[in-house]
Image 1 (tube, rainbow, N blue to C red):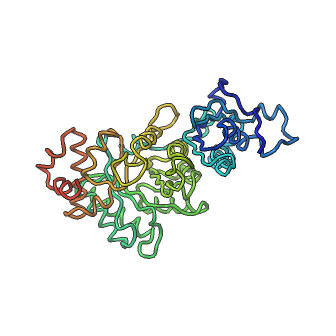
Image 2 (cartoon, rainbow, N blue to C red; image 1 turned 60 degrees about the horizontal axis):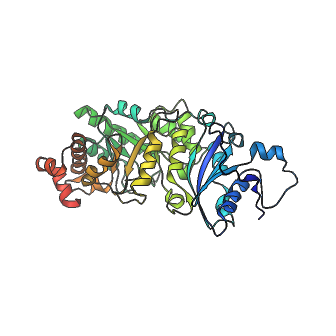
Image 3 (spheres, rainbow, N blue to C red; image 1 turned 135 degrees about the vertical axis):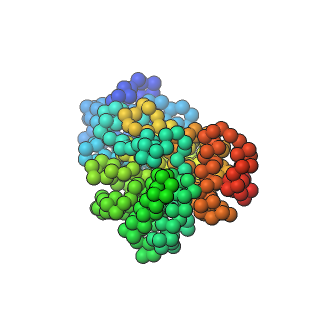
Amino acid sequence: MEYSNRYLHLGESIDPDEHVICKYKMKTDLDPRKAAVAIATEQSTGTWTGISTLNDDILEKYGARVTDITGDVATVAFPADDFSIDIGGIPQVLSVIGGNLFGLEALKGVRLEDVFFPRSILDQFKGPKFGIQGMRDMLKRPEKPLVGTIVKPKIGLPPQGYADYIYESGMGGLTNGKDDETLSNQKFCPLEDRVVAVAEAIDRVKDETGHVMMHAINVSTSGHQILEVADRAQELGASELMVDVITCGFAAVQALAEDPSIKVPIHVHRTMHGAITRNRDHGIAMVVFSKLVRMCGGDALHVGTFGVGKMSGGAEEDLANQRACVATDVPYKAVMPVCSGGMHPALIEPLVKITGLDVQIQAGGGVAGHPGGVRGGAKAMSQAVDAATAGVAFKDYAADHKELFEAIKKWG
C-alpha cells in the first residue's frame, strides 16, 4: 500500500467543533505513522494506491488527519462533513470510524478506544426520553439505586410461571425485572401472553403493597418489525421495553426512542458485545457503544460490574462506560447505568462504593438461587441496597436481616 504524508498532520491544531475525533490503539510492525496514515487514508478520501480523481481540494475538505501519535495510540480527526446523519445515521458513522480499518494489512491489530463528536452531530440526535431521572420518577425512587432481577431460568418458564417470578420479586422489594436476551416469542412463553401476565403481576404488587415496579420486555427483532412489536407490547401493558443493541443495531434503539407512540423507557442490553470489545488489541471499546446508545435514546444501558461480577471488563473500562452514560458535556439526559452479570446481594456493598447511587443493580441467579427462593433473594437484594445507601456495613446490617445474612452465608 502507498502511504501519503498528506494525511499526517502531527501537532496540528484542529477545531473539535468541526471534527469527529477518534483514538485508535494500533498493533503493527510498521512505523506507527504509516499505520496511522493507513487508517486515515482508508477511512476517508484515499485507497491502496494513488488515484487521479483525488485532488487537493477534496483532500483538504474531506481527508482525515492524523494529529497525534502517543505510544501505540493514534488520534485521527475526521471532518464533520464526512458524516451523513439525516440519511445514514449511526450505521454510516460506524462505517467511517469503525469500518474497513480492521482488515488493513498495515495493522496486526487495531482498537477504536474512544470517539468524540462535535455539537453539530450531537444536536442531530435526541438522546433518552426518560433516562435516570425519568425512571426514578416513574418508580417513585428518588435516591436509592434501582434494584432488579433477570428471570431465571433464561428460557423454559410458561407465562404464568414467569409472572409468578416477577410477583415474588416485587413483593421482595425489587424495582425492576427484565427478560433475558435469549427470550423472545418462543412457543413455551409467547410474548403477548408474557406481557399480559407480567403486567397483571406488577399490578398485584402495587395493589397489595403500594410498591411500584417495571419490567423490560424483550422486543428485539427484525428491523421492519420492531416498532410493531414494541407498540403491541406497550398496548398490552409493558412498562419498559428491551432491545439487544448489538444484534438489532443502534438504529433500532433510535427508531423506538424517537417514535412518539413509545411512552415507556428503553432498556438496552449489550449481548454479543464481547465479540467486539473484549480483545484489548483489536475491535471497539465498549465506551464507544455507550456513547452511541445515549445518542440514540437508550434510557438504561448495561455497563459492566466494575470487576465485582462475572463479566470481564474491569473497573476502569466499566467506569468509562458509566461516565459516558452520565457525563454533562453532551446535550442529553443521563442514561441509567445497569450492572448485571454474576451479581448477588453480597456484592452490592463493594459495587456501590465504586458506582455511587445512580445505578441499577440486577441479579438473576443471585435472586433465584437464594435459600429463601425468589422472594427471599429479592428481599436480600433490597436489604443490601438499603444498607449500602445508608452506609451501614453489611456485617452489621445482616445481623438483623435474615435474608441478607443467608445470602452472605451462601455467596459472600
